[in-house]
Image (cartoon, rainbow, N blue to C red):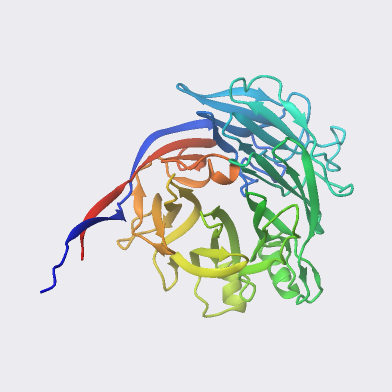
Length: 464
């Protein structure tokens, strides 16, 4: 008779997340600059970073009496036990946009600025990108000013639409900056501290439009790891469909209207040795004049790019009624995994609107724990099944391309738009989720710290 040897092995299963809100507080409340760029205008990057046990945020300060467009300056904040303190601000130069940050684990902090080269009374004009280097030990000291190197002599302006990211472990930085409706320009700061590589990426051509034109890509999310670079960006051009453009002009009263409805991803396995791929159109709402918001990008241990975005089926209800009768008005939170330039997986995480849930998904970001467990932190609005208003943040666990049950985060002031201390900005993965953004019922820019009480349960399994 055969003898069976029985043993026990442990199978680790993901445990439910138990978020604990540790801090909710105001950071700053800037005066309106009226220049078209608010505190979160650089949303593809981040203004929040952790390094050497310290937490820093960049902000904008509207300069009294200065005329738009270049009428703000950057401010650097550090969080202390008693709250946020200003440690440094630009006393000399002016800019239009908020200034994203990136960090290395050794305490170095970098701030991307785009100061104007124009006189104070000039509306717009040339700008020269710079990067300031601070250190966590003395953030209030004079920063080191660095000037990135570029291919050729790009005619940069105050409209930078730039992206800024860090390979934290690799101690390298990547800066993207737009030139008009022509191209991305990029510059790499290597491990030795030299801006040693640069390039130009022409925008894809919209040959299918009535009047073919380049598709300007803006607000890029960038990720860099071991010289492999990834980009997620949204189309940003004047409405190309004449009939829709004329209707929207009557509807809004504006002479201009921009198209944000085509989502593109591009990458290179080696920034210094291989060109970027042809832009891959990951999603589009072109057929029904919809809207897409690119939200986040995260790299897993295998180097795959996880993408997050919002889709609205039709931009305005009036447009639906006029051009697309019968099309439901919906908003969906979408997720995809791209493996070596190919979409390997897609999933709708939430969908609200006509014919769907009455709870509407909104602004969202990825957050990963040190072991690589991935979550989406999202805002939800709308109303519940009983008709009561919904205004809350939820954590959606992701595992093997599947979504788990969302968990409500008990914030007193839910965040409606926000940035995080992301790995793309050089911050390490953490059991703490740091948020910087706009919170319901609180003016200006707020901060929250949420500890994700997670772990694993181990189940005994018989082994024959």
